[in-house]
Length: 234
Image 1: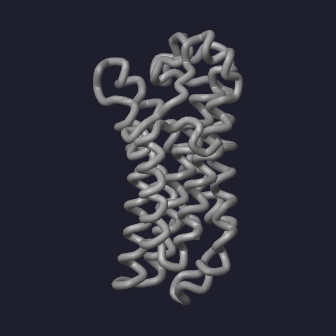
Image 2 (image 1 turned 120 degrees about the vertical axis):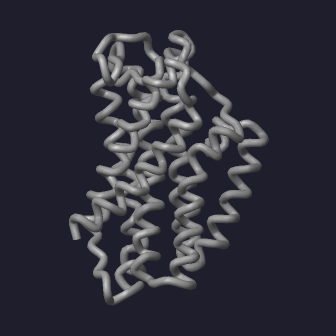
């Protein structure tokens, strides 16, 4: 099911990025790969959920390619690269923050996927800026159900941080890792990233940007917000 929604080139790029995560992730490589695999599996599950209904209303898109893989995977890859750099040349504390940023970007991508794929079951969406009802599948439209399941998607990814909590706590004595704050920060960041994606979707309908640029910004917001929220909380 992991590759069910990817075309051949998209699947190849995903495999290549997976190897890159494993190499530059050093001792955290397995976590980076694990999180991306979980995202792919969850994305496939919500994509095929209610497939007949989605085909009927015209929102089903089975195959996604290189642009979609890059839009969702580039920011996590950058965060993993920054983790490598911080581990080798800066300070373990910064490396730990990059892990949180990485997880925040994946949480945002997952929240967006949950909201777009499952939100269509929540009635007609409303444009995020004007509250005007629009057809299902229109960029910038949100439903209450979509926001709720988006938050759940972000939370699912946030909980994966506990798999490396013991390592993060030992990376540096100058910065004490707090698992609860990390989960809270990543979840909120994922939700915020999803909302920003919907905001950008409003402008997509006006010809400014596209789904790939919105997904890219969504992941970037998730990464930055997760780091910022964690620093504030700690």
